[in-house]
Amino acid sequence: MPSTKNIISMSAIQTGKILIVDDDVDVLRAARLLLKRHFAVVEFEKNPQKIPYLVTNFDFDVILLDMNFTRDLSSGKEGFEWLDKILDIKPDASVVLFTAYGDVEMAVRAIKAGAVDFVLKPWENEKLLATLQKAVENRQNKQSATPTLSNKPVTNNENPMIGDSPAMKELMDTVARVAATDANILILGENGTGKDLLARHIHQLSHRAEKPFVSVDLGALSETLFESELFGHVKGAFTDAREDRSGRFEEANGGTIFLDEIGNISLPFQAKLLTVLQNRSVTRVGSNKPVPLDVRLICATNRNIGQMAAQYLFRQDLLYRINTIELHLPPLRERKEDIVMLAEYFLGIYRKKYNRPVAFLHETLITQLEQYEWPGNVRELQHAIERAVILSQGKTLMPKDVFVKTASSNDSALDTGFNLEEMERNMINQALKKHNGNITEAAKELGLSRAALYRRLEKYNI
Ligand SMILES: Nc1ncnc2c1ncn2[C@@H]1O[C@H](COP(=O)(O)OP(=O)(O)OP(=O)(O)O)[C@@H](O)[C@H]1O
Image: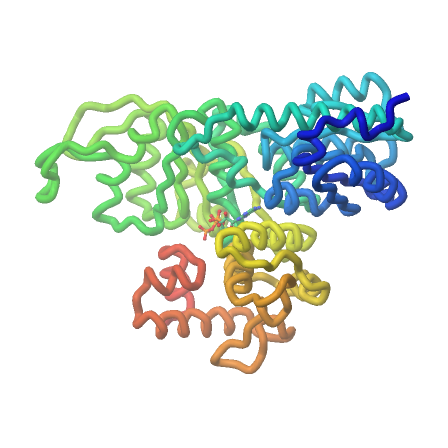
């Protein structure tokens, strides 16, 4: 019998990068011992929650993935879920599934679901090595044959929705069911929970993915701009209309229009919007020729729009039009299971962007991240990690890198018992002071949209 060494090709030995994910440490140890002698890099991970971070930040030729983690022991359901997630983040990833309970039927299903192969545990060394070698070679050949695309369209793989909490799973299940339909969707959720990202994700999953995705922040549109921006205008319609111009609805034709901050428009504009949606056509300002529309509508708001309708602040008939499907994005404090996964995901992005050596979150930091309430939700976490990566000095991100003391208080942002509104008001005041009242700059610093900052200025009477 040939030694296992002989059956591995030279290129796979020199360059093959393998990741093994299995919650059984004995399996990890044995597999690693074998594979280390045959491949250039062999990483192993016990916790499947680390998969998004590892897959986003490192380029493995093959991921050897257990099908059954602790949740249920033999259905393979978890393996399929993680397989989906890996392919969502990196569609060209090469995944070999690893299971003690496999059978031919499961192997076929795994391959249909996007895995490249399947290995049964306990494994035969030759079989495992030959399978991985083939997978490494295929992937490397595929990669060298793929030209680099300079103008790749933005896809949901580039902006994945990270999160594995029960709340996010339930939401994403609904999204998977409704994305392909043309149903109008209303996304509800606090600032920074990911409404814009979710709208893009739905567009990417729909049959309109290759067509335009047009996003309009209605909260930032002034009354004078509203109509011409959304519906377009013809030359001479008003003093500044020097030429014909299409509006955002026409630009979105064939694709998706995302109307953010829908709860912020006045009643007269709600009526105009309703007419466009009812007639499925738009008429440019100054024209009387309607242009037929074929757009999928996604709206979002952080306001309690049902209550607004009950108080006659939002038209009930418009609400019925836009909320065929209502999706609720929970605040981060209600899905604490996602915090570390998100923090690691952002850590990976910013260590690359700023070329920093930092790669880990300190244990104490993890606890503190999970305890903090995140009033600014994912956006606040993203900015906190970005700033921390820039400030970091070693390989490990420390609590002091993330929870900085503010000038106005001696308390770190983490201290319990602080008043969230008070803190938010302080932060806004500081940002405005720092940028001499410049709203755009202050909003950027705070990680808010201009409209979101304006709303807070109103709320706090600043
Ligand atoms: N689940 C997620 N996974 C990865 N990144 C996320 C996730 N949710 C939000 N983000 C990121 O957080 C930031 C804020 O998200 P987004 O702009 O979609 O929130 P929003 O709810 O639309 O905010 P606002 O109400 O203030 O307009 C973005 O940079 C987005 O990419």
